[in-house]
Length: 303
Image (cartoon, rainbow, N blue to C red; front, side, top):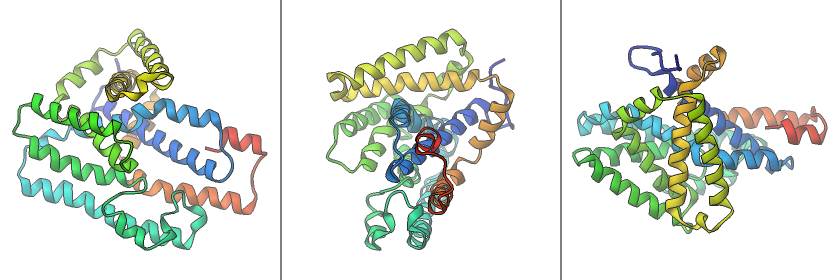
């Protein structure tokens, strides 16, 4: 049987597996960027992260929306208190915590956000670090609640239009561009729960292999031709990648892998909030003490 058994009465295991895989990929991406800024860049790691970029955060938002429909059916005051204000509170709190920590230990910083207190003010409008995910969830829940009474086709159409515009809005800050582009996938999760659960039940090795080949071909085409200039092509590539991600998470058979990823999937928010401080501190300690292997090993295995 595929990895679809419930962890509890309200959790679906493959969803937690997908979330766990996503948070590992996020940490890997930031670790790779940290190594690049310290002079240990690796084209192989950059290419690997780029290959998974159309899947990594969109899949995170897809599964976040998957079980949001129940919450969105409650009152505005509940949504405002339990989702919007909670996420904004966490965002503001961790802006301060990160600024204070990286001001004391600048060698652990990836973004340089501690360079000026003014960054704390601008971040209230334009997120400039990994916390943009939390900021986005606050906005997504508010926007999804505004659209909740509309026909799902209208909701998806609105989000699709926003996504089309955002993918081509290269003049925007990257965080706002991502937030606009990925709202579509959150709403697909909100409105497509039964479709996604059915898709997961169809998982098989041949289906995953076919989707993996199709995604790889699509990725090559989008990134090596004029297709990459079209927002629609990028959205279609991500939708293909999301189908691949769902099937792969639902098909995972390795018991240890399922347990580790599903456990990580239940604690993605604390990992997301804390990992850059923890990772940066650990890496900075190694770099500052000189306890490092050869450069070739660092470039290959550093992230």
